[in-house]
Length: 397
Image 1 (cartoon, rainbow, N blue to C red):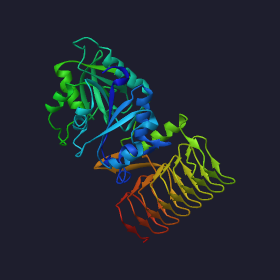
Image 2 (image 1 turned 90 degrees about the vertical axis):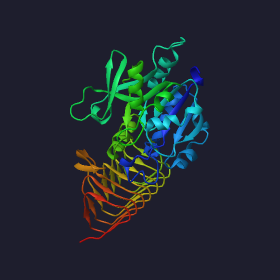
Image 3 (image 1 turned 135 degrees about the horizontal axis):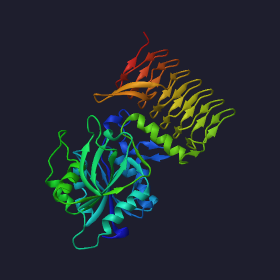
Image 4 (image 1 turned 180 degrees about the vertical axis):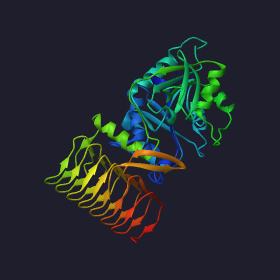
């Protein structure tokens, strides 16, 4: 397959457990960034790169994805779906698409924001080798990161990939990381079949790439454009801020007398900002959000149907769907130590996250880094820190 006939396989089956409670009812690729879900940013980039056939590998909460995107016509692409019933890793996910792709195809992660340029680069390197014996067995995009140890660190010799080491401990051997855009041929499926499970019991694409690099050649494509990743809850705030700063917000809705709304926000047409309220830079207010009079919301993501009542202050926070933040509640910004799945993250700039259907009583204070689950009731005047499980009632005193 050549040019526009090439398919792109987009991996969108995972749950994203590190992003709980936000992912308890929605898959990670459907988390909002600006005016649209993460996965929509990816599909738009693929379409803009000239690739019109996309195979979505879905699994966890797949109905949300399939209902939203349908056949892809609204994005100028043809979408088909294949299901990964068990989330057994990225290589296993690619394997599910074996019967849906041709001799050459691309693979992308469905939860990283990239520019069409890198997709075009990988495609051109893959299909540009028109000899019977291609120069490389696979193509992979790489980029630089200020925090390489969070990702797959890549060792190169010239333009050849030597090895990918996932999240190395200690000092990283390189600032170059796996950008998550691949070009493969059909023989990758044989390599997947020959690759064993990782220590976590999954079959991972970086391991497959290492096998291909050992036996042949994997060509690196260097990419220096936008590359945004949502691995932790607070990443959603950082990525949202960057996307809005790039002009991808939208100002609509109802803004009442005296309210101040930055032009670097996303304000849905059904949202309301009350009198003398402040909505600061880097904020997303989704469908039917209500911000009460004299409230302040800054650098925060507010999900649909949430209400932030009069006088509340919400900074650097994520407010789930159908949440009520009571009058004069304070969620301040500040550095925090946050524990996620047993890993300690220090000095994180993070107000907190409030799970769906939770009610915060008036006058409550959440210390920086607080994570509150779904359907929690917090009594008025309560000060709280740390993590609160789902379906808990927290009483003052």
